[in-house]
Length: 83
Image: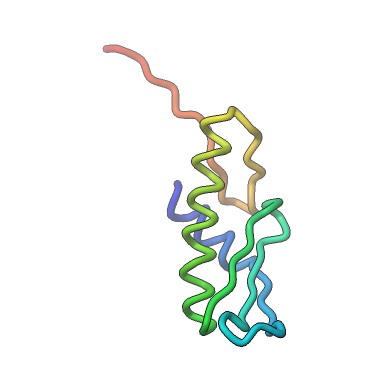
């Protein structure tokens, strides 16, 4: 569930080159407010963005914030029942 959600978020990411000599690659996931990263290379930016997405999910869960579904990928509460 979590891996699929992060993968879908990365598929929806938008990348661009920005005017920054140290980290010219910028990426963001428009569907997840506040998720952005930059990097020295496109792959470095993508790795950093993956970390940001994972952190965004954890903070959202901790603060009981809504996590929007991304296509068929969603994070939902798993009920626990004692047998």
